[in-house]
Amino acid sequence: MLPLDVLSLAFLTISAVADFTRVSAALVNVTIDDTFGDPTTGNQIVYDPPGVWKVGQNCSDCTAQPDRSQLVNGTWHDGTFSAIDENGNVSNQLLTAAVTFQGVAVYVYCVVTHSFRSPVGNSDMSFFIDGILVGNFVQPPTGDTTYQYNVPVYVNESLPFGSHTIAIVNGHPSGNQSLTLLDRIVYTYVFPALSPVFVPTDPASVQTRYYFLRELNFISHALPYCPRRQHYLLSSQCHGRDYIHFFSHAHHRHCYSCLYWRSPLPGRCDCPHNLLRQTTAAHLPVTQRWSHCTRRCAY
Image (cartoon, rainbow, N blue to C red):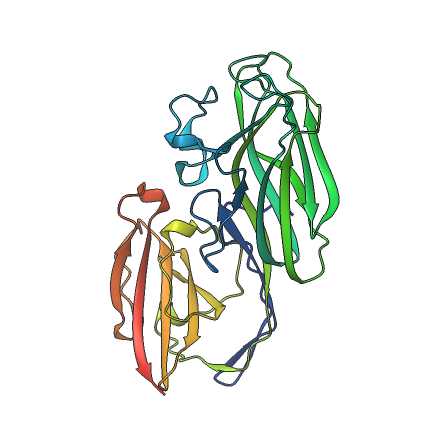
């Protein structure tokens, strides 16, 4: 199951009894951006040595210059391993990129090129989870100077649920020069079972027709935070477009609910229950924007 770019593939089992809806569990893919990190936990990818890894989109002297529009958030990290340093001395300084996540699966996406020079498109990566070698990605250059995007250089869908640390190691001691262009790391998180939640019903309103969650494609940096959100709960439709309904409980006996849907919509979609309608991420292309409604309500 290769993930979509962001918080996607939410699978819920929903059963309704009277006015209550119970959700058993959900699998949600979260994207850890190479530069901005994990949007849900704030965890950042740690690069070592930091002076050797370059922020690709800001690196004018890097020989690798992929099309930034093809990368998530237009960012990447550029790391080149060389057994010989710039002074001609043997260094064998390996490059690592590591981050901690909680989930049952993990995917590493890179940009790959096979050019002989400028850049040297030799790929030689090793992958460690919790300190154990779990995989390799080795591809020698062929002379093809094009860039391949969204390449899943490592996939693991059989992790026990819990906290894990994945480390990407670029190069081997005394090995050939190798290049890593890291775009993102994606992991699959499991939401626990929920208690029954009251769902208002109004057969005359299209906004209150609830469905099983289908595959939804989120853009993480375009998705605003629902205050203290805890669970993906429901999806519904507005003029034929899916939206997802969050329920989240906060302190001081107040609850918040947020409704999101992809814009532009074929017609105006009023927010149900007198929620406030807003639009987010106006700097993004319209196909990546999301509108949302918010409400604060007392118990």
